[in-house]
Image 1: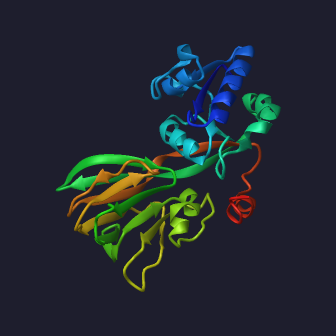
Image 2: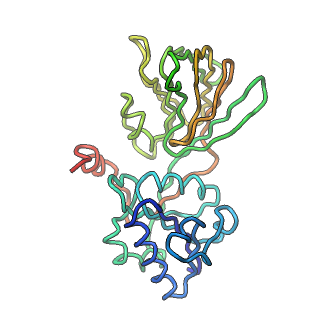
Length: 285
């Protein structure tokens, strides 16, 4: 292995320190590290800076130092290139990451020698259309969310599967989640937990003003469309916590399974349900 991309959560001193250690370790083995410009500056190695999307597709692996949020953002960037991602937890929850920082150097040689398996996670795309014209497209690993702004009243949303209208929600918004995102915002809003390899989309209303609204589980090959029927105030679309894209009355947001998958490096088949018990039963221990 000759090139390794490195993503560092620059807000976490532990991740920055680990980044310096990994760079030294890689260079000692004649492996070229590549790191995003802000990370390169933080570890005092600006000569290693590579803008994401230029040369990262030449890497044979990406190592991500941080928590789940850092890993999700990195996966969004690298997924179209099929480069596999190793998540190293230097944060708190670490539900998606594969290994703790303290264990990394005990296993890094094995990872670099290709002794791992790949776990693929479904992603989704969200396209905003206004009067038949596409305005923007977003990709998400966890979820895309249509939600009202802080001063808005309830918004009125129509939900379609294919060409068929299946629901209308007066609500604070709607979450479109992947199986990976079933343990995130959708779960907090009352949605079910879904195994990570199940090929479905989850449609979960947020604080619906009705007594009969439940999460819908839709086959992954179906298109789900949300129409903004009424919006008395601000409403926006975000993907995995991004800044919201402003929506207007009549906008149509179309959700599909993305053409690419996030590819995570695992030492062994991911123990999803063991992780549920350890991470979600008592996440603050």
